[in-house]
Structures are given as structure tokens and as C-alpha cells.
Length: 185
Image 1 (spheres, rainbow, N blue to C red):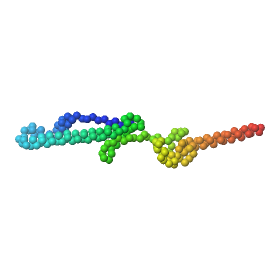
Image 2 (cartoon, rainbow, N blue to C red):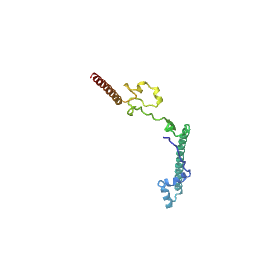
Image 3 (tube, one colour):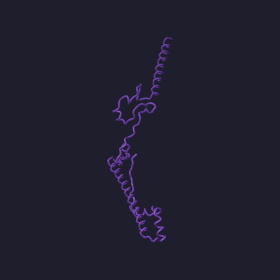
Image 4 (cartoon, helix red, strand yellow):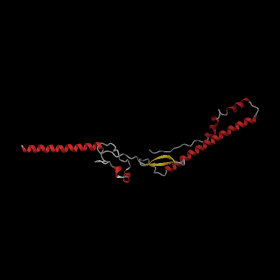
């Protein structure tokens, strides 16, 4: 499953109006003093200046956070462009955060399927699960099980084959004995 990175850039005008509502509870006393008609103009101007500074600081901080997010997204997009753009099974990516704090798109290999029994189809225990090319680089002991049909058939199917072969041989012997008995008469 391919990850598509999409983003929307916020309207910069939002930052100017956002501060008025967010600080109304915090600096509500400024408006109260203005309504009461206090005489100390220096104190009023100091509070309004503090209010304006906090609003602009918060707006600036939000803009910086937004820019950092955009930079991260742009980093992802530049990394994604290095891979072919087709959304196929063999061309999947995942986004990983590196120790440096950078987001990078990594190529994901296809999931390997376990080898299955040729008769009943259950996954064979004791055999490594790899992509086909990976079996060339591992030892024979990791690819097989030390038994007849090891690595091809499960233990129950081998047991059934042994019993079936034994019964067929016994049946042949019985037929041969009956044929000889019939020939003597």
C-alpha cells in the first residue's frame, strides 16, 4: 500500500485574527479596567502592549511550526520522487524518521510466503521464509528437514505415503499368493 503525502497550506491571514479570541480570558482584566475608566494610562498601555506582544509571538510561533511541517513534507516528497511513481506491489514505500529527525521514504520489499506442503498445503515448519533469491545464500540445513521428502511434504503426509505404499505392497503380495493358489488347483 503506497503512502501518498498530501498537505494543505493554511491561509496566513488566519494568524492575525486568531490571537484576539485565544487571549480574551487571560487578559480580560485589561478590558475591565478600561471599562471602569482607570486614571493610570501607563498601566493600561503596558497591559495592551503585553497583549499585543503575546499575540504576535504566538502567531510567529505557529508560523514557524507550520514552516517546519512543510519542510518535513517537502523532504518526504523529494525522497519519494527518487522511486518510480507506479503504485505496484513491488514499488511500495514507508515513511521512516531518521535519527537526525528527517523523514525519509524507504522502499519496502515484498512479503515472503512460507514454503507449503505439496499435498495438504500447510506451511512447512523448520524452513526459512525468504524471497526466492534469498534461498541461494543460506545453507541446505535451513532449506530442508532431515527426513524423506523434507522441505517438500509435511510429516503427516509423509506418514500417509509410507502407510499407503506398505498397504499397496501387501495387497500385491496377497494377490500373488491367491494367484499361485488358484494355479495349483
